[in-house]
Length: 300
Ligand code: 13P
Ligand code: SF4
Image (cartoon, helix red, strand yellow):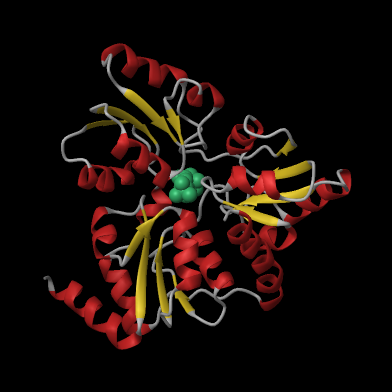
């Protein structure tokens, strides 16, 4: 084991720390993490863990959500530079409040990829793997869904409730077009296309499966097919190859730069120097925690 990895292991034990990593993280970060998963799984792990320190390797809203769910734990987000999801600040508290005023009967479901302030104004948060259940279970016929119009339109296809969409999207997933998919389908006749619901409807409609990062991994593992076009961020390749050494994968060049700002060195700094700690305002925690707790409750 390299010197840096052994120092991380040693400090983790001394401090009762765990390392959580999203599937889009660099491969070496996924390899050193205690748990790797999608944003729903990692939120649950953050809440349920007995660790005193959580080192969260993902993007900022994920680490803030861990802090909100577990205010008594110390959460560290070891990104060397600004590492926000591009959707994090698309829906602002002012815009959400004006939608609430416009639709007083509606409940607000915010995608977890939102700021803590927007979470505090929402009735429930959701992730891509839990959105359908939450929208169907929440006690309202009209749902204001912020900020991702693509995930929102995907959920609209799955529910009889009225979804009021917001004009946000992930610019990594939204840039994929039907042309990209058709090129692969024409070239590889036996290919299965699996896509994240942050993709446009026209792309989802050309896919054999649509789901969260962990949904994609489960689908591929159980599919009898051997070749797949993966329509989500390329970091997932690491886990796909680990789980399916006999299968072949093609990728569209989808890179989320914000997910690539964490390194073993910055994790060591977090553990050694207590750098990169996440702090969230107490009043925001109080209200945003209700939305995140509702997410975990309603998606059961
Ligand atoms: P998952 O919940 O599927 O991991 O998605 C998080 C995300 O940011 C996708 O772009
Ligand atoms: Fe946000 Fe898109 Fe990156 Fe996911 S891939 S974290 S939605 S910018």
